[in-house]
Image (cartoon, rainbow, N blue to C red; front, side, top):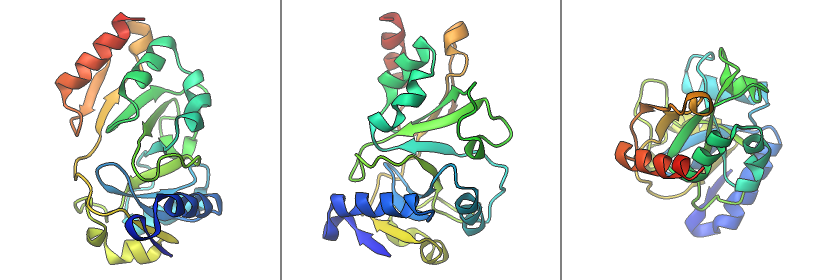
Length: 212
């Protein structure tokens, strides 16, 4: 099934995404900077399909993405106070936060380290969808992640149950930040620089933590 945000509208795209993921399907979707593959983060069969489409190592961890703040409320409430301040300062936005996960939520996304979980919260045309997403870039393993719908490999689009055309995106990956030690020591580490520059990230975190 193909849905175009421009032609069909964001509400139709959100509804299609929720139906697909809720029904155990796999979707190609526009994130904030790049196109991604998504499914229910608790559905092992759907995650296996994504790994086959990408030709990637099944042991590689993935982030869980949210498109609505209320959808991630329960997870955030389980974090320490500094972690919650960091989430509030940086999300929604082009950031992946690696958070402490003592309750071992979403083990299929965590893989070999179940007490660390990557989380994202983004806006855009799909904002408001309530389903959490196991998400990874919509490319074959080792190839560049696509910023345009037409650049998503045909075998990936055709292997998904839903493909959402959201037009051209920024092409910038998220900045990955490890905040697993922020409550214990105040420390955080940038694991990958991306769309949010390190200086801006540091300023936001400093302001949030100083006010706590």
